[in-house]
Image 1 (cartoon, rainbow, N blue to C red):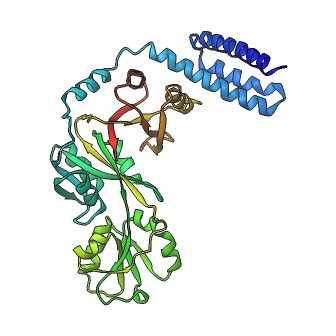
Image 2: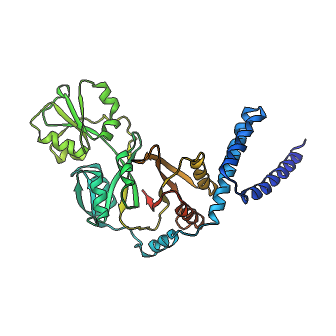
Image 3: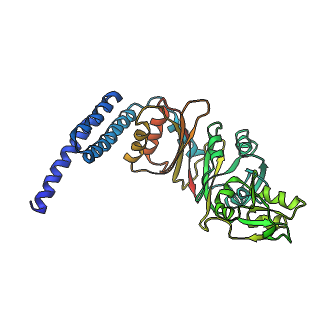
Length: 365
């Protein structure tokens, strides 16, 4: 067979497949039939081929469900909510605002806030929950929260709180983190017996702490709180893992500037607000959705984003309190809110029985 003949044959087969796909996608089927059909593919005897066929048909069935849903959106008002937000939001992200942060002066959240806002009026709260409440109650227009770290993963406390608060994401940024081991002037490294820091910072410096197992680790609410505690203590045998800013802020010496596992250490922060605001340049969206125990439900969901050529940059699952083995999924997707297809997908998800929350569309620096 010549190359030209092979190409002709391939095109003939692919066009037949495309025609059959159109017919199949327009005929939705129940899950019982789909499970039975996929199970029957094992009967071929060729395990590798059966595996590929199962992948193909799971994708096809997912697209069929998506197509049916797209033609049945009847009870979603999300389209208008998004249009209203696009119209009413200012064209420039504000330079000044009252902003809620967890911790105290010198916290990484404060450093992130100062990079996001030229002149922020910061209100500090002891917990992440306090930040959510301050925004939800209208005490602060915005809140800044850490959501994940490049070397230690998600800030699970923040994800868990998302399920119980009403908020929207309006901006995000990645902040380079530079942890230091800080102690009172005159302290010697060999005399340090305890170290204080936030659990994320402890995880990001795990290699150093494994090398110094004689040092007891104490978890506190914030890296800046750790530095303040060391500064105000009467002890010369304790240290804090904190930021360089906290060294000068609380009069501490840098005992070691190479304590974190990686120099390429970044934390992603989100800016939240009560009402939906969508600023120009928004190119990332976030949603939360709870899926049932139906086999293939997550695969179906992901195939709907894949069908539009959308790139998912984050998929996080957290258990729903009070429900046995039910999870809330958090998704970040690279998408334009000006895409009619994407907004239509959001409206589909909003109109379906699963719990769904559109958290916002925003720019990330």
